[in-house]
Length: 455
Ligand SMILES: Nc1ncnc2c1ncn2[C@@H]1O[C@H](COP(=O)(O)OP(=O)(O)OP(=O)(O)O)[C@@H](O)[C@H]1O
Ligand code: NI
Image (cartoon, rainbow, N blue to C red):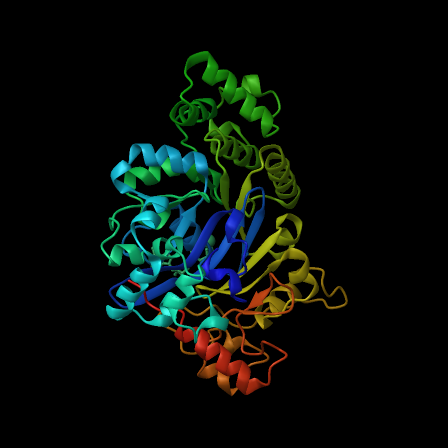
């Protein structure tokens, strides 16, 4: 049982999710300002599922991906939230390698009483709202009572790292074992653990295949290096596996092409080779950051088709980043719409296209080429994505929004349920069924329990 199960904002898909991103916050600290590139976003990815992340340039899509991969460099830093990777094999492997940095939740359950822990936290001045975060309908209930009812659990305290605050667990721990399935907390993993998590576990491909391929080595040697690192195969075995992988990504004549250099490959073939390299690591989750934007439309369609086939074969989860709603329609099961560092709408792909709720999403859909064949000019949303350089007490989309009203300047919209169980939007027009003043009150109170800046 998770604290989130009653929350309209965070849909209860937690139990089986392969990846859980919760209140992730990543900022860049420049001389001039703090850019809140990813500003407290939450979403999940299930096994075998494709989750699309869509939004205009500068909305924070790549920073989200790089935060998950542990690839944020100075002046940037993940400043809050967590990224939990829930794969039993990975948890066991890392728990063996990092016994001192592993938390055993079952042990904690036998040694500590959750209600006592919560009492201590309240005494230390932690707000009850923080302890019941996600329990909007229970926010007036004493958190100690929720612990007694098993609604707030030891696992919840571990996930929010309250057990660190209590001195029960090591602050540097990042592997969590639990009978219900543990996880690796990527936001707390050390550099070397991240390297182990990348590749086997989570693997990423980028927009420009040339940045992932080294021009001085043959394509085959680069794939073989990945095979050696992640599967421990050498010599002929590695060579055979490299050919199999090139065949798996439909590179014709793989026996010969395995010995060619990247410049001898076309753009589409290079992107296929990069996918083969990513697969050499046998990942559970593949993150694709605009992998087809540099390619022409026909090749783009072939690569998407290929990814779908590979996904079916391997039950691979895919997080697919694009600014193109057309691509989202092709490939995604679930969609997260980002704007200026925030997640403004989340929905299954059908619901998003049939009934987009956020005016921003509506604008993105209106600007898909071919939507209005009777018009000669493509519709666009006027203006640009603002740089998110302050904590918003308003709606960041309001200046461009055709539906904006006075409150949008002074109330920050939170994600609220909009119809379908798995559909949320962060817009003051919702919940539609409430009168405006009550809707605004709901956004204000959700904002107050949001946690805000965490670290
Ligand atoms: N190294 C950095 N230093 C400072 N700011 C950065 C850095 N990297 C990203 N940002 C800022 O973070 C915000 C989000 O950038 P991000 O690259 O994630 O956008 P995106 O949605 O991937 O856009 P695109 O579609 O153009 O790839 C932007 O405001 C960007 O300026
Ligand atoms: Ni990007």
